[in-house]
Length: 632
Image 1 (cartoon, helix red, strand yellow):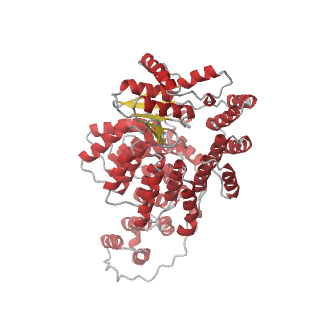
Image 2 (cartoon, rainbow, N blue to C red):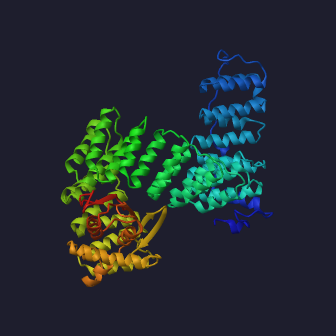
Image 3 (cartoon, rainbow, N blue to C red):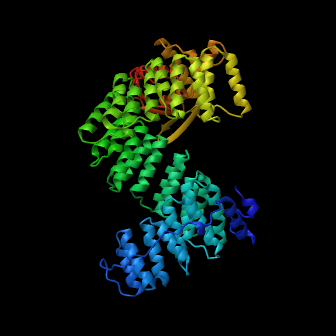
């Protein structure tokens, strides 16, 4: 961890050494930009003639403070400031500090800091208000430099100034600086202070160091709801939503009743996990505490149910909401889109326009994406052209990405290429990924190489893009180029992202990878696969070996196909759940074409509905067909 060994202290140790404070301060000097606050120009400030018509003031500190509280505009604050100067009341520390605070509340930091520099007496309140004021207006460098100057005065740091500095580190993602301030927390003996610890948890979690956040969190003698919420959110954001829900259960066990902000965070974590059983439990809990669905919680629940596989449950939430904003409508349109219900998405869009809600750029991303997943080419083009013409919304790179995806999936590669060449905006990862996907579908090797190269320039450490290009070469039989890609990945120590499939059975999540035999019931799983193989081949299923991109014979390729992780999860679902039960699985990558065909056949032969969530969308398999219409 950054500089801990140099300073002779672990951030979770309780015994600082003698040289600790001076070392930590020196480290702060190294990290922070060198800025002399005294070089900031003073405003040309001529005190106006005092005007006390707004509030009669007697010449005592309490009256001045009361007058400042009543100020509604910066001009009124300056009136009181002028009177305080002319009556020498500005020399009273309480009055001066209140002026600093009121200026900061009005975001008048030039005036606030000018007053601060002229003050002959300052205390921790003066510094806290100044440091916090700069943070409030987004002047984070000045905020942290003020904190350094505060330390240099030799004043005792407290549970007011430290959280302010830590929040500035959080907002600037300055993890290293936050660690150095964590050192100072131990020097001051404030490691068990609730406010300081909460700020540390927040800083570490938002900077992506969730394990350090958890260590501070676990050592807190008392945790408030805000801290629980930050910790739950931290795990969800860092890709561990299951731990978020474990924390939520612990929070309830400790008797803390969450508010709507906390529940929005919990719902978001459940959406990331994609577990329907958990979604229903969370919904039941919200009902049990009689929590109403405001626009934020309702919108989050729409997204949760959509990502857990039930667009119908999402629509029920949407219909129950008394208030909806444009994000709510956009979320429901997006839910229809990822489940392949393009027509329903367009109908809902028409209802939104009829209700007087004006679409924004997010709405158009949702609509265009829905058109892309459903193959609604004409409708997608119509909405794309109406954006700027009818709603004065200039398309950004996300809208162009949706159009590339729409045209590419529909086989109109020439139009997709022409569109990509007209785009003058800076092209991002999603844009080149959509173009590469179109090239993969239609076998355009030359353009695929160009798109892949652009992706690798943007994200040279992402193994997925090397694998995509390798698969394109393999499909074309260019095995020497496949070998070169593998050599490049090996030399850069990059590994292919393994394919995993999850299935939820009785509130427990099981995980499978290709050829997985670690499950306790693996014997029964492979026996079920053999049964399925016989039944499906009688029904006309032939493994599509084009989806096994290895230079081996077709018999071996077929063997690889039958051990794909989604097939193992489906086989387990068939033996672990009652007949007629819906099987729900989640794949971390795009489902391959052979597994898609296999799942359609299984849904018909075994009379089971199967819902598959892959990296791009949902597939609802029923009676031998898929909601995507084989268009994904």
